Image (cartoon, helix red, strand yellow):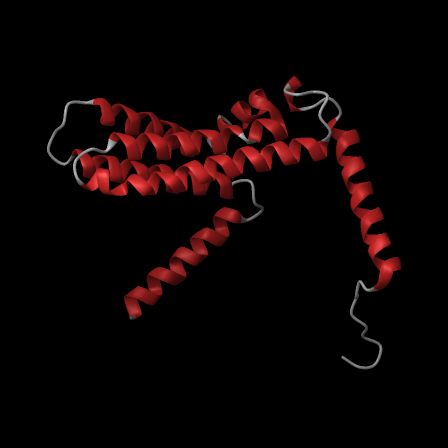
Length: 186
């Protein structure tokens, strides 16, 4: 690189103060742009408070979904309701966390946009179908159907989330191709 290359290093109180100033300006700019946002959902909350609300709600949803795996054995033993409902409820709580960031109306508009419509329909459809199948009278392969619905639900949620990341779908497709080619060669 030669002697003119000097990497940016944040050290000392001056650099930390610059970083803090930059981040505060960015937050203030976001708050100014956002104004009373989130479609009037908690309009008096600052951006920082909304991000904290999102994090707590998302974390709670993730926690509930992870806790559902404690009842995994009940799914295998033919009593799928506890697992499936708890897992789906965790997903609903995590999805509702975005209301803190953009509000329910904007979230609905985003879910029904042409870019996300199919994924959202698959996700919500599997979510509803999972709960409905739990309450049907027991039938052969009910546990397998619920497991498949939960897997599709998870994959649809991942695909939906990737739509918010620039080039997220493209990266996921590339990773899937790489994994499949490794299995084909393996």
